[in-house]
Length: 380
Image (cartoon, rainbow, N blue to C red; front, side, top):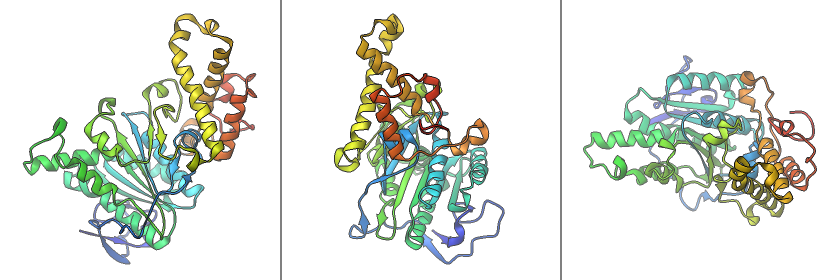
């Protein structure tokens, strides 16, 4: 099965066959590429290298993206996976002048329509290709739509030699489609009713996401977590391929902390002194220690009150609360709904602000003054 590829694919909405879904003229094909291609040979593939800045404070600080790596956004329904994905696409276009390829696997048609128009409103659709296999389509389409989108990502990587962000929303639906096909083929179900070929099917998709000397493909994959159970076999199979894990928490969302990233459960394979540098590592560990101590003391505070804590613990708790509020951020893609202008914060500025919080420079500030702003240097 082949899809038409050309530089004209940017700014377009396509289906699994590369046919337009946006009512515009069909793609003028420069060439056709098979969606069932082999991964790049080992001698041409490049390993992951360095941090890819997103401008999102909590992610750049505590679970940085790996350039050419794979990142998973884990969370149940309604915790903000799709909004975060859209913000990443905005960052790639605005900060890195790169391109994004979006694979809508089993998306609801309403969500796809909203996403398309919001990407246009945010001004990044011209650097984006969207490939959709809707929820109402056959399992064969939903199972292979990610490979069609990946073919476009490989084409952009090889021909335009730019930073490419490959976004999949949602990888769990890819696994579900594989499970439906497995049942239709009469295979005996395996663990928790999943297909016996689960791990090889996930690996077939993940191993194609590679960087070469032509350019880097960095992947962000939204993963629905059934019943918020991180031990689900499908979630475990996807998790084993990832470099960075961003876990979105319902508890954070309930507190009004957006992005609702759980700072203690999220992490990256890059979190070491060698990869990040001494300063970034030290600040990230300091922030984590403050937030971890606050979480330990939360029950005591609820039962006995803040006054019962030691002077040192009281200071840690107050700073941790401010850090928690500081790590919220207004997004560009939600500016029309919230009325707050989006903010993109350079990593260096995030490190400086967090350093100042932990050193006590902002002890006099109220918590509300740290909420939903960019940097502490004034202005959102």
